[in-house]
Length: 513
Image 1 (cartoon, rainbow, N blue to C red):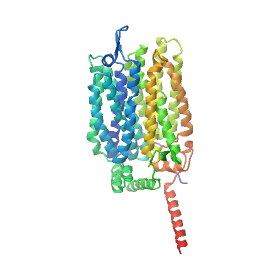
Image 2: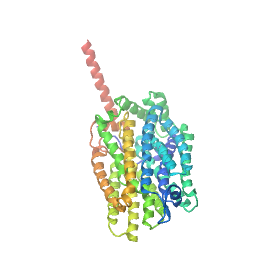
Image 3: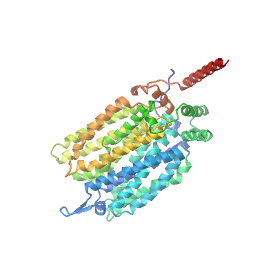
Image 4: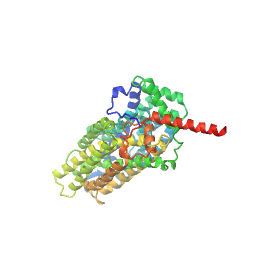
């Protein structure tokens, strides 16, 4: 077979025209709110003013505190809302389009932000966070898929990687705001950071109708003229007419030769079974290797160590996450998904096991500082490996017609894993329960080892491949480690299929004669 050329690097100026750039930027901006929520609440939980408003008074220490049981519910039950949002968002996205899903979820987010800001009891803010996570779930269901469907194949890893970096940028912004407001009095320290929840959905709701719909979604709805028009808008000026027409023909061909699938049972049949396991595994290890420990409880954990200002550390970790995500976004299509995950997992394993080992000795100031350092190193490995690539794999690995159902199923597992980890963390970290402290590094480190084994044997390298090329590779049952080196010539394949059909037709005509 002839060589299917894989790009050695991504030339942004030769790939993104103005229309595509603005569309990607708006979709990416939407994800800021997930970072606002996750890091915003993680930071405010470490504030004395938040504990005074929503916690309980300890007469012995003469301070307000947030009970571990309530923390477990506050950081865990919200994923029930996210699971609902994933199912709802996937349904809206599939039936009414990617833009309609983003519009409706943004309106919902504005309502939830109002409930959060006006909360004065722990019951109200708990319910408000659950409702807000419906928005987060809808976002998870539509953003990576929308991005992967409108960008050129060679830019897919870079583009979908913006999903994770925008989450981290949102976390950095809200941590910096929380660092600045932490010294204020009253409820302002926690209300100002959480007030950022208004900014993103309001902007997206206003601008979403100015970007084009997904051409693949339009084709699935039997609207080929609109699909071709949109594809031209997204490629004009950077691709020749024959290249645009070839890409459109490839999408159409992929849809025609894909059996109409999409039900829950269908994703477990045939070649879809392997693809489903890959996406599910990526989503599980994304959340099970320890990132929620630093994301949700990092500020509280650092505060309990009593070494440095917890908000300084959360800002440092957020800055590391952003810079590493930028690096990985630039390298993912050049180095490939497998290398990114392998390298990142090794760093995670080293950091987590070291963290656990430091927790077994007397906690001197130096030991505590070392534990904090391992948290920073761990986040580097996570942000380089699983964080950006899991979303890319989830968007590109599923079969075209089964993509929504596969992504929805994997996202529900993703959320269930987050829920389990978030609920268990207060009991694992604090007395009078397990009180493991930094020894939880042994637990997450062991899971990280399993993630490395899974990545080596199961995760394919999809860099530079069109979604239609990936369909062919899975149909041919190519091993994961050979995905990037396998040669494909879809034009020859299409001609061979046409010749086969012509021969079959001639045989039928001869029998009739």
